Image 1 (cartoon, one colour):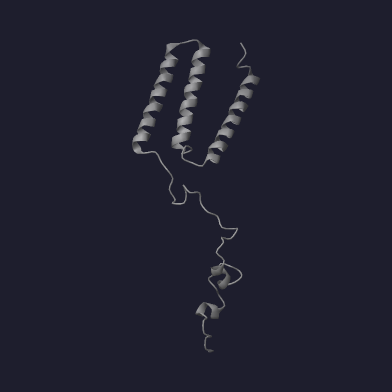
Image 2 (cartoon, one colour):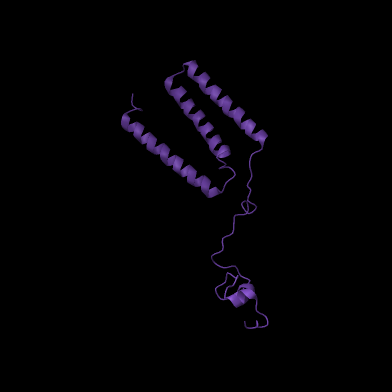
Length: 141
């Protein structure tokens, strides 16, 4: 066996290096700028955690959802004019859907772009549904 040169490690003797820089270990430590392929997490994701509602807030949301559901059931049994009751039921459904999406799907605490993507898809779905109902003649008297 040959004697190792001064300043080399056993990994260098074996032909393997642990540095990730293809220029070699001396360049990896000398280059202070980050490489272009490095990805950094968003500040709220850097710790691996993001804000969540507390248990008390979940209970408040559940109570609000239950109250809106009770209002929907009461509205159904009041036998109001059909257009008025259906309009109010749609508003109640939108409120409940928004609360579920914001808190239980964590969109309120997530990145702004994800909220916009969800909202744009939801708006598109509403317009497609309304167009379909229009072709069925639902809005005609």
